[in-house]
Image 1 (cartoon, rainbow, N blue to C red):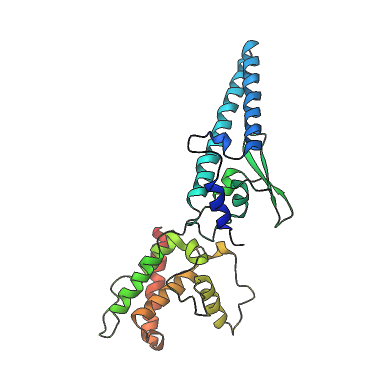
Image 2: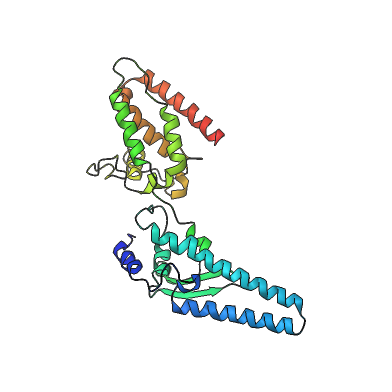
Length: 286
């Protein structure tokens, strides 16, 4: 589901708080009241415990207040601030659906609550499952995946290979498997799910997306349809144990260097063996 970025921009342009606001203020007045009341409860319990000499309870309530402040500050710095600053740089890999609802205090956000262990929960109606769900800050922030800087280096690598095309029997100007492994190690999630500006958006095989190209290649190898056991789960493309992205990009780079490489069985065999060896070496050293 596409994000409504205009709605996000509008929200952050008009938020009723600023850089000097307390962390407890940034999730709306209802949540702020819940936090303030919880702090008040622990402070009063702490004072009462000290008054009667119950130092065990005094220590517990003091720690509870510190833990609460830590939870609130964590939600501020690691979630809401990050959410505001990365609207345009977030990858499609991450699921920002619930975080967008929570951070913009939309009607589906039902406020915060706390578990018995003190973890802060964000209660939000998820219309995809038809019920209110209650993720923690950590549950939400694990969806932060930035696009990163991989398109420009990939385009430059293609151009370098084209300029050094194998018309005189020369090897590629750089180690293709090493280059591909390096980019996948850092950026595979974005490469898998975001628009790839190194691909032609008008090419029906990709429409500008690497994943679509990978799927079409797999279908071509299976009579025009994907194998029944083909794993489409996005985590299954992790290059630590999967070679589909590596194969697709490295073959594309080899063809940029030598357009006839697929017609030369001997060269193809050498390339495949070299890439398999380099892939194993890089993964074992990761």
